[in-house]
Image 1: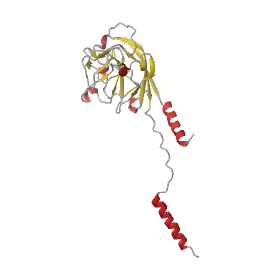
Image 2: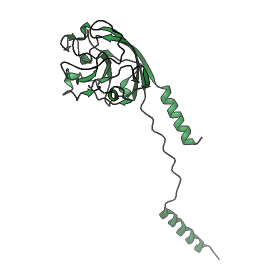
Image 3: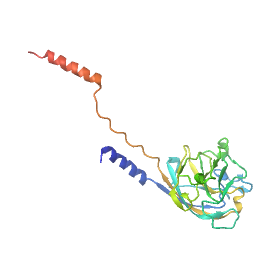
Image 4: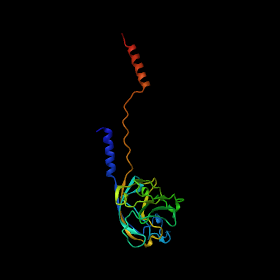
Amino acid sequence: MTLRAAALAVVLAASTASAQVTNLIVPGTADPWLAGMPPGSTASLGDTAPAQSPVLVGGPVNVATGGTLRFAATGEVSNTGVLQGITPDGQGPAAHTTGAENGIADVTAPLNGLIGVFLDSTQPDLAGPAPAALSFITPAEVGYASLAPGLRQPFFIGDGLTGTGTGAQQVVTIPAGATRLYLGTMDGFGWFNNAGQIAVTVTQAPAAPVAPAAPIPLQVAPLAALLLAVAALAALRRRPR
């Protein structure tokens, strides 16, 4: 193994070893549009913080350090209040009835599916206009391999796999400036009467390591070589005969 390959192997091993994992429960009543909002805040035609607030992902995962996330989710929720065997991948697509709210963008995503939203340290309704809405309607959008949502952009997580109960783990890149990640479920309005819960495992990997640069061979610049040759010739001429 070359020195460069060995150095890269050490960096990669350190990255793998430093992966962080957090387990949590997301109730069906967790409304993403109350993410980061203080007690008494309202959203979605009947929801109030903290009763319907989404779940903050805490340590060991720390999104402020950047990198990527992978999710694994099991369980079910229902917006009707009656469990029907729905997986965390949800059902047909739904949009948020009140659209962008509290500075958080709208989204179209599978009803009763697991949803996430990144925030920075600012209360979202004070952070400026809501960003553009993401869409998770087509099989390609729902089954993405990798995703890079922005701050205050709700995004679909589902069961964390490219297919329902099958496929590769999906990878979500943490946006620059993120300090918090909230998890909730997808509904149109009124999370307060939802049922069920989803068990979620969040795994954070650090940012991809930069491979060590290949060593640069020691070379003598042409001008330096010429000067050395001239100096050597001059020394030879000064030698006594």
